[in-house]
Length: 475
Image 1 (cartoon, helix red, strand yellow):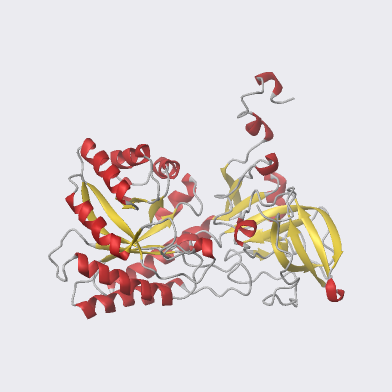
Image 2: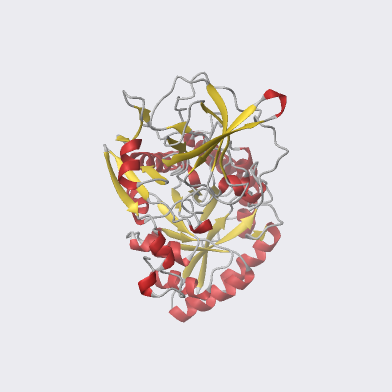
């Protein structure tokens, strides 16, 4: 991990001094997050202090009702938009955002399918009891073993990513005596307005086929005895606001779809367009994500218009909303360990607030420069807002949890701190850097809490070290 750049302004242009540094901004926190009569943060009816007492910190907290609600809302939005054009829509939950058997059950209860990108993610989905026909398999370098497992259990689709994979998968399917449905991943050339590492449809990157190569890929799939071409897949990126990029991408993909069908409805093997998703969420008060209903209507209407212009029947559609299902539902709780004031230029001061986690439980600020919010969780304060930087305990200057925020000036050791919008890509990217155990994940609902992923202990980490004798592990 590289050190945090020193050239950034001490106060980002988007960050205003809040009138109340205790407020919980709508859209950033779980829907029912609130402060109780004593000013303490309550999530899913459970107080932050009770969660810290029972499970320790750092702690990932997921509001179960919030996840279920976002999943159901996404399914309904796309189903309704598609129904207006007499087609069907399937919505996939992105396993890479956050994956556990409990969360998989929540989203499938709400009607979502599941996409996975590794043998491990597939194993979790199957362990949760997902119908394999409702699982899609992604990845640019699926191993033969992963392909064999996916084919053996009967996954609904595999998204092929290279000519070599087409040959590999065809051999696996033929050996198994089955015909495997596949989609071809296509780079539309439309660039998402997001971080470079999150843009996935430009040509110079590892995923998918160019528009030109996709035609040959379709021919290869159609020639393979063990494969059946069912559709095209395109994903332009992640953390995207608005529909403009999706509309342009849809125009190019529908053009390819029409070409592969010969401009008619004769090619009955090609029936689905998966337009990806990666819809953004709010991490700070400056973020204004697009409502899922607006996204659904805009993208589906764009596909319908492109199909009408070409005189072809509209295909069924599929979407992958990504972090928008689980991101807002998550909050990470930390305990403040030390604080330190640092003088900046122009008479400014920044208070460094060190917590008991860091880049091992949230790598996104170090990876992408991602911005987050923070609030005192165990109390409210009348102290004036003070510019702070929330940092972790790792031996890296880039170990930043919240780059810039205003908290009450009296934030002190022992306070509980809450960072919202951590439901996606925090647990998934967690590591044991500096040999810190990964935190537990706790679900909250109706005033109750329960562990859905056990936290690690030092003994767990030592158990993997083959050089330690069993009698030494707890020494």
